[in-house]
Length: 346
Image (cartoon, rainbow, N blue to C red; front, side):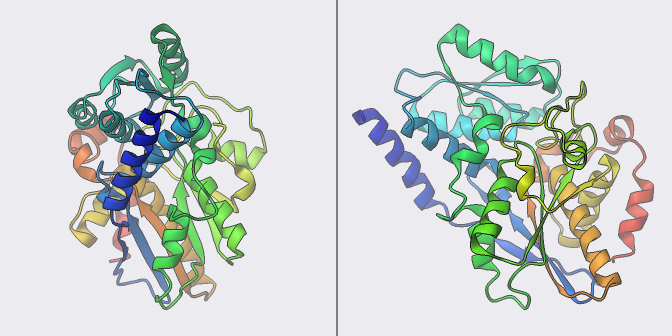
């Protein structure tokens, strides 16, 4: 292994040592009795999202497998947050970075990518991203990171302070220390794979519920046991939902899936802002809607316990979209009904 690779790994590991773990905080929901809901705040990573963990793992995976050197151009297919985090690590290592993404990606994410020295290559829709990234890698002689292929294998699911181990360690002093359910949405499927594998490895009596937005095939694939499903549309909830079943998606470690309407996801982040005074991205709304669904069923059946889900990124990135009422009406539709359903919890 060359000196450059050794130094690159050291830089990434040093960045990890400088980063404290993300906070896990309990939501105070007046009408919730006997059930505690926790949010793990992944927005506090240096690049502002859960994808910071993934990008770090993907870069280490590439370096340790001989895929990157000091002359590499790094290329990724990403709707935003992964690209932001990968641009950060590419800049750290002095490597050019190109993100292939849909034109509709939030401007704030594009600005972050360019802030870290990256370039953006636009396509019309999410289904075009993978082939465009592969072609670009061939044209430039670059390395296509391919988060959707490698996310589940790049992360050590047995521990090493992955997100699953972090959750269970942080829950140790809580009234219901072992969660009844962990709720996670799927983008690459890598995080849900890590959670499900870790739960089984450690023998925890915890269920994994994976929530899926509209215009995504993960839910239908799980229900129909069909890994070959494809769609010709793109998810409106940035960062999650895919038009095909990605290689990192591991249905065998998932206990249950739930389809969440996009209007419910957006209504939930607006409701969450009233509850905690902070804005979160719409994928957090998908997660939290799922957590509230589990909590409601637990209360109906007299069960007590805890539910953990993730705040994937900050809502500050989406002020022009999910937090813009005119945009929501045009792109998502009427969210009033879901907002009223959420108000009863307060």
